[in-house]
Length: 186
Ligand code: SF4
Image 1 (cartoon, protein in one colour):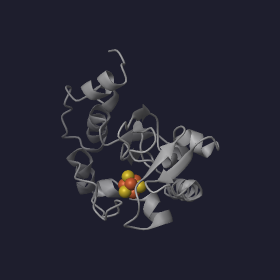
Image 2 (cartoon, rainbow, N blue to C red):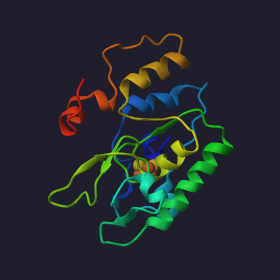
Image 3 (cartoon, rainbow, N blue to C red):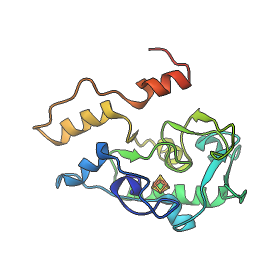
Image 4 (cartoon, rainbow, N blue to C red):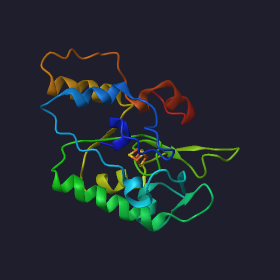
């Protein structure tokens, strides 16, 4: 799991990037082995600059077609790829069954990321993954985000016999914001 989603203070500003009850509940199950990892902290420490992907998505970064730049323009591409390899190593070593990743991050984003600098006046989002999620997907790992509420409902029902699935829950890509912004149809 993206470490910040577990409450670890590894965000760029030394915070946990907010609180996400949808996945925090996972911490209370003794039957779940949860491995938190923050790829950006691994490569760049905390606190650190904000970074975003320019010229493509996480997969493009791995393929040498896009770059990771900090808000001040420093090229973090190499460090981010190194971090993604470390995350993959951890996932393989621990035989991870499912990765739960913080969406929007240039490292951990699993569905939506910024398209270039998030602080630009004309900031844009794109459908795509961050670099570390791309590395995990490439190796065959399953990934969901903290906003995939329908998938999380299924997950909770698998690990908790008493969990009653909320059938109204929807995944991020079925949500109003996503559908409106990316003009996708139901
Ligand atoms: S790199 Fe991932 S785990 Fe680390 S703070 Fe950003 S979203 Fe969270």
